[in-house]
Length: 110
Length: 117
Figure 1 (cartoon, rainbow over the protein chains, first blue to last red):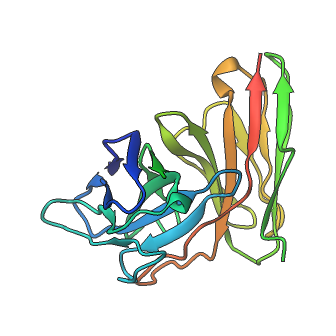
Figure 2: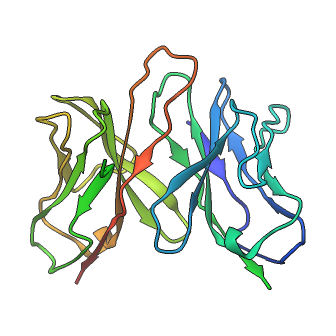
């Protein structure tokens, strides 16, 4: 069965510092990887997906199949980036069924 | 468009009581699902549906029932609430794209915070 692991439950950085949220997965096929974000008092929403290969709000994530990772990175963190971040995986046959990681609470301090 | 609407926002139940969490979407999405969110465990899939009249179990289905009589609605029923079902419940929907080269992203509701005493 597939599994998504986010090793850091809490991550705290200062404004302007680089930030990396780690995501590792276990799945032998060709997964699709996502990052979802939940800002305070807002609903969970898609941040980015690996097939788009785009930068959203300054965040990027590259799928590394050799290391089975999909780490989320931003070179200069902003206070408004403080949120709960979830990495998620979809198998090629599972349609919209996602397997989520445990989540990482990011706090960006002024 | 309202997107995905969940009601109620908060609910307190006593052990053994039953209730239904409502979920409705106005985006004509074929796929709908229910997740529960627990600290340190992320979101876990309870049940899902790929279209009206079709439902299936997810990762943690025990203690929950669902039905999908219309495209718009996907209620989640707790038959006999237990303290272990204290959680935040999220409904999510998307276009179902079987056989597509990519999957449509999920649209989430605001969640229902359930406490079972």
